[in-house]
Structure formats: structure tokens, C-alpha cells
Image (spheres, rainbow, N blue to C red):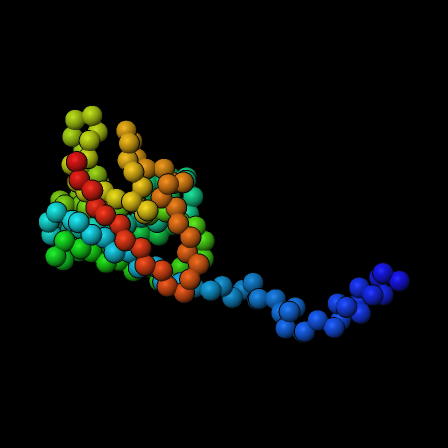
Length: 150
């Protein structure tokens, strides 16, 4: 009897409740990254986007996506299009001498600017993925990151 009542109740629900999205069609998003507080217009701002803690923030070869741009009036805007929804973390470098690496001084202290999504703090080492991660779920998401210098 319970099975019959369940079947009747189930069949009375509106048909649109059972529409399943096609797994082959994935919503694509645009991620806009606004970098501010750059100290000069030299070189290039380099962005690496990670989907997991593996390699974050320094192993560029493990990044999901990369982008770069020039500084204008202390700011740089980078856009990543056709991004699948998910959780990500961003690492930034203000590569002032365009040598495609972070230049450091004594004891590994950065000579160039750096940043991370959520403005994740750096304390005796690089920021953690957990502190920098953010969700990308909307059609377009804009995040702001402050460039930091030692």
C-alpha cells in the first residue's frame, strides 16, 4: 500500500522537477581579477590559478590556468574566460624585470611584489591554498587582490 501511495504522489509532481542537466554542457564563467597597489609600471603581472593545494602557489607547471598583463596607473586587470565552476586559488607575481620568476634576497625574502586571492596572509612562507581559495559559481565573478611588497 505504501509503495502505491508513493508511486501516485511521485507521478503527481510537476514534470520539470525531473529535468537533469546534460553533463556534457557545463556552465562557463568569466573570472575578472583586479590587481591594485602596484608600486610601479615596470614588467608584467603574472597570475597562476590553481584548483588544488598541489603546487600552490609556486609551482607554475601545476597551475590550471595562467594569465599576464601590464600595469596601468598602479592597477592591472586580468580576465579568465570559459572557466568551469569550482574552487580556485590565485597566486600573483609583479615580475618587474620580466625574468619569469620571483627574485629574492637574503633568506628568501621577495624583492618583487606578490599576492594571493582573499589577500591571504604570508607568514614565514607562502600563503596556504585553504586561505586563498574562493568559489567560482556565478556567470561572472570579480575579485580584487592587493599586491604586496617587502
